[in-house]
Image (cartoon, rainbow over all chains, first blue to last red; front, side, top):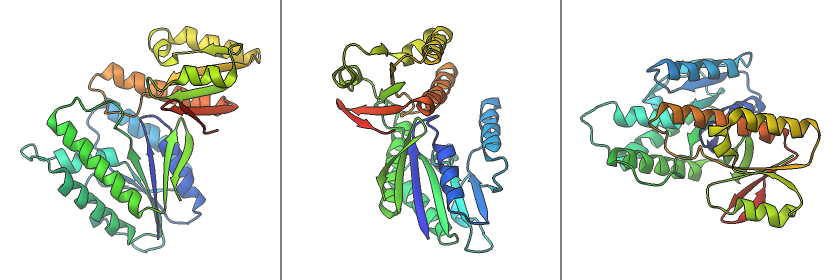
Length: 176
Length: 106
């Protein structure tokens, strides 16, 4: 079992790089776990772009917007991409409008879901986000979100075999 | 073509001048020009690349923050990010400057 964590900013080429990583693992069963909820035309465009990127790469697409630990996979030999953490976290955190976000609890929940998912796979590539360089002048919900994302990235980085940041399509290896 | 990237106020221009010399041809602040004057920026860069002129392009990385609420901002950020990926692909060297220190990533 191996875990690869890929991080990057918006439109930094991280998905394409992550897909390349997965293909390099050279396993027959490849899952693409899509976490985004489509709300409008802009989201739809984004999803279509990603589907196009995956064309011909033979992925089995699983749409799961939260509770990814519950995904059932038939055998333990497959490899998967989880794309992406920003959407998964938003879905876990903000689905219930009355919910007051507790970043630590949410981070623990997501990391434990990921450990559950990983136990059913040969390898998992997670696409996560660097959202930390535009300051902290945001409302408390956004701050909670950033805090949870930071926690998740640190926890995943700790258990990952490899941590790679993608800048303008170029990988910078931080670990492994 | 050499591409120099990094966050705002990290010393990209100083690094580039120290490292590549004053005589090199620079195109700077491309994140600003991409916003206000995209067509002419792209033309200028393509033109110089076609003529095979040695060129150093300097620009901010702007995608490493919270997704902007404004739709135009979001689409600018995305288009610019993709453009940087394209430039990086065509560059012979890519440098990333952090706290004034340049790291060659390609």
